[in-house]
Image 1 (tube, rainbow, N blue to C red):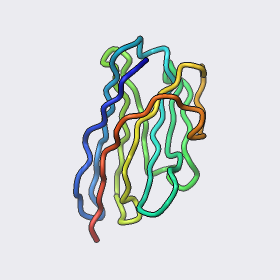
Image 2: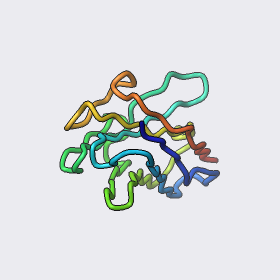
Image 3: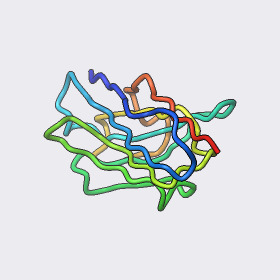
Image 4: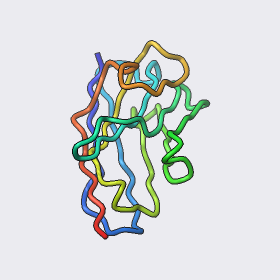
Length: 125
């Protein structure tokens, strides 16, 4: 199995930027489709962005399109989520997820078998 560790969260003012990182270990990273989900207080976990094994296919949730950028570096076993122009509504725990069943990307929580512990992002107004 693969282990995932997120980092890069924190407290940021509205309008600021963050780059979240997720480092994988344990298996061949390039065999896994990767995704970022987020869970705001009192809400269900929701899809944000996903990327295929090679990085050739990328998908975003409609509500974040244009504001998130997902990327991966298979040589570093890493996937990233760049967030610019943050707003308070972006406050959530952000989770990295992985699955080796898919060559492309998927968007449902149930599509991913492996999860990180999450990193808190808090945006102050």
